[in-house]
Image (cartoon, rainbow, N blue to C red; front, top):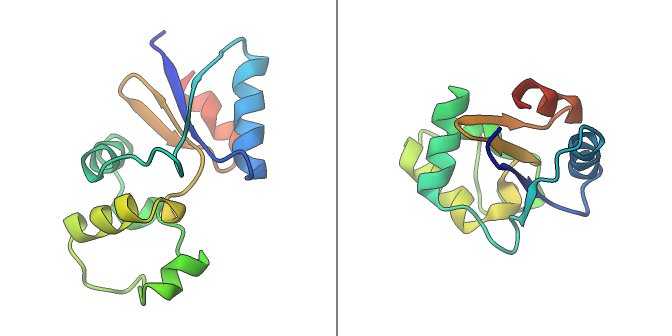
Length: 117
């Protein structure tokens, strides 16, 4: 198994539960506090491609920052624009995101991490 990485927000209960599930399966992942070390637009794009989703699928549209930026989930922004917005505003990135090699999953619900370990 390759190195498992969790893009984690310790203040998020779902993120903490996903980390606990990994540890309960004897996996000590690399922990990236993505609000402090945000992924690039290129990384976000790779994750979306690995999950076969559009960027909006991993965007927290109910986050206060989304409204503050005047965003709307029906905007006709390009893929690149959404990726740039999320890279510049990591609070908008869904959490947790767990990466194992080429496999990526959003841990919502946290049990979804089991799909890639």
